Amino acid sequence: MIINFINLIYFILFSLAWISPIFPHHTGSPDGIQTGNSRFVDPFTGKREKPSNYFILSYDLQKGARGNKNIHSGIGFVEFTPGKGNFAFNLTVPYHFYQQRDRENAGRLGKVYLGAKVLPFFDYQTNWIFILESRLGFPSGSDTDRTTGGDYYLGSLYGTIGYLYHKFSLMGKINGNFPLTKLHPQNQSNNDGIPFWARTTNLVSSPESIELKKSTVLSTYLSYFMTPRFSLMMGFLYRTPYDGVEKTTSSGNRIPLIFREATAGFSLNVSEKMYFSFSFRNPLVRGKEFRIYESAYTASILLEF
Image 1 (cartoon, rainbow, N blue to C red):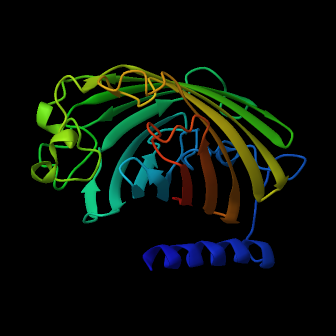
Image 2 (cartoon, rainbow, N blue to C red):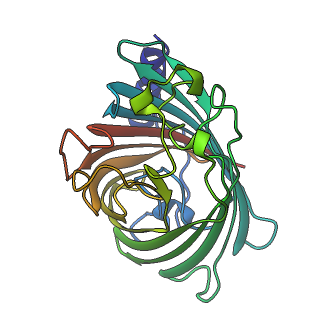
């Protein structure tokens, strides 16, 4: 019911943007398309690449996830620029709801991240951008009845480069994730939404079954502005190890080394300070015995301030 209500709200916003001319749209380029922050939107997350003052609320659905469940995630993200727009702080707070088959549903607070990003080299108004970002993920805590995401500190570094060409924007990103502390044995399977005391023997992880590893993520995406307010996006993501920083070591060769995923979506300028984006993600390695999820959808509303 809640999901249907959210979908209805998104549909209304989408319709208003097309049928109503009351929203002003200020542009600074010859083709009527903004050359500022709104040109660089990550279709995997709905977030902007350039430092900016905005708040974003995202809904993410992972269908057919491991353990016969769907994972619904609500993610709050806020970014603040204290200077002239070349530096920003940000905060990410996720909440996950596990819709599970043959057992009780569960909700958990996810790993909280605090980050900072900077434009170190290129002028803020040029067509080229280069962005450096770092994020710190905090331990989720030992109470797996309330939290998920791993009871350890996680450091993440990002390097992003992009270029604007008329109605197109092309981005490339490299991301390294580094566990900064060890994983406690009792929390090594806390991403499944099952309380530790309720786990069966085969679900309780031992120190040998999950190992914290450094992970590398490469992604790229292309955006095309069909109108000054509407753009289409497509992208590709590559990650190793397959499961990210929590690598399963007791599964033999069932889990591949590399995770690959394609995405497609759109971004819509609803008003001068409101944006809506939607994306569909499709894993390209689809073995049922090791898949992370069958498919995923992300919808987000962004508000500037």
